[in-house]
Length: 120
Image (tube, rainbow, N blue to C red; front, top):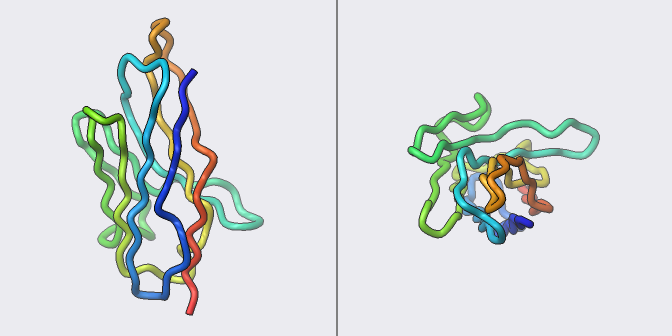
């Protein structure tokens, strides 16, 4: 099995910064695209950013220029640097990954989420 564990969420004032991390572990041969999604109360889960194994990124329009998605392939870890945070960024942030497992299946996995609360 594969586990994705997020960390780095918390309470931050508007204009502040947070860095989220997500480490994948378990029966992994390789990881293709990794990314972040967010879900605010009463809304659907939406894409924040994603990054291919080769480092190509794409971002949702609301976070362009403020958030940076990066990864460490050797450590099966993806990061989300969030700057200039706004109250509307408040949500649970979920890590997502397309994993090639050791039994040669390509499967999509989710983390359990980490709460980001932007409030004064």
